[in-house]
Amino acid sequence: MSQPRSELSSLLSRLPKVDQVLDQPALADSGWQRAIQKRLVTDALDALRAEVRDGKTPALPDAAALASRVRATLDDWSRPRPRPVINATGVLLHTNLGRAPLSPAARRAMVDAAGSCDLEVVLPTGQRGSRFTALLPLLRAVLHAEDAHVVNNNAAALLLACTVLGPPGGVVLSHGQMVEIGDGFRVATMAAAGGCPVIGVGSTNRTHPRDYEAALRGEAPGHEGRPASAILWAHRSNFEQSGFVREVELPALSEIARAHGVPLVADLGSGSLGGGLPEGEPTVMEYLQQGADLVLCSGDKLMGGPQAGIIAGKAELVQRCRRHPMARALRPDKTTLAALHATFAAHARPQGVPSLPLHQMATVSVTELRQRAEALASALAWPLPQAVVDSRATIGGGSLPGDTMDSVALRVPTKAPSRDAKRLRLGDPPVVGRIEDDALLLDLRSVDPHDDERLLHALRALQSR
Ligand SMILES: *Cc1c(COP(=O)(O)O)cnc(C)c1O
Image (cartoon, rainbow, N blue to C red; front, side):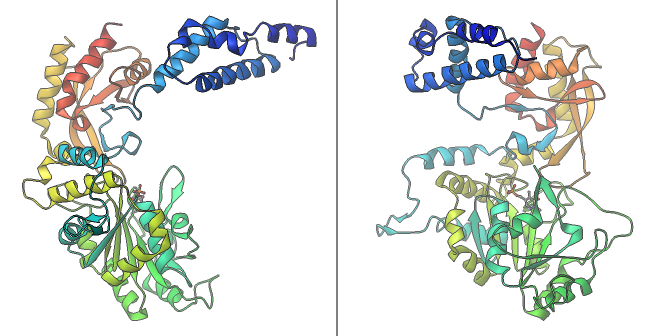
């Protein structure tokens, strides 16, 4: 129901004026530009007016109330974002929580590179250099690859590789590998985003060598006369198929690619380098050995590094990717390269891999997790044994779907699990747990042991409410 005109204008006239709000003490010493404050006040007033016009009857704030509301926003903006949180979800690589936590060495390297650094200068000669010079020999050695290139993320690696190698005929991809990776993004559409046709072949559950061969001869239904220029293989990162299924494995696919003189590009996603992480996920090196000409993967999944996309494989193909104009648009910044270098240096040393937080979380024993949980529970005077429960953690981040690890969780003693989960998320530090069977669980496998003290602090705050 809309208001009668006169009533409406009287309501609207009761709203404070912009300058009146700006002159309130709450805003006088905010330290923010007046133009910024004005924008917030105007937006808040516009929102109130819209509500009134829509027939709602919002509580109309006076100038002081509106000023303190705006001040709260400004104070919120004063804090660094994104904020550090404690990941107690039990998902080790949680995409929404920033995927792999970086090693101390990688964090230091990022901070050191944040100022001026020798990103593109060769210090002995003073000549211009490439931002990849320092990193690539290490990458090639660790990956056992002829050459490698780095972009912003694996989606960018996929886009670049398909844009460079796909046209004119495009890439052929099995329907069984048309993965949706999250947030609605799909491997096939990302591959096509740079103008590369994607020829889907086979069926959801079964794809045969003859399906690929038909596409490479230009006989795929709907693509007649336009032979595919490359084969794309996508790792089923986040789902499994069983039953009446058939997939052409990489070695066989590699033979088909060779027979037709086209490259085989394998989107691995997870980017495992082996080194003791849970078995079962293929490594970049295995994909290369099995005949992939290019392997694409993320830096912040099983590699345990920063967000980055890695293109590794045949030197000639990698160079074509590196020289494409799109490579410039997708290039990583200095802090990413610094963190990636530190991460690869860790992978190259026997003592290095255990220093990666992801590795520590994946390999910590259940006994140790239980000790930490019991210490926390007793510090909080929570009832044992109910407060310490067995749990299942997962790697996440598009790897090892369906695979879980034994873990231990704190079970928050509460009658209102969702309410307390929210309180913990809004606490300081924010703690993100998970609700399971109507209980609020804080899985310790995804929590850095150094954060146990801060977790305790957050739980004490919850308890004292
Ligand atoms: C995760 C993933 C991607 C996307 O990688 P980002 O680094 O998140 O851009 C692409 N393909 C596969 C198979 C993946 O698992």
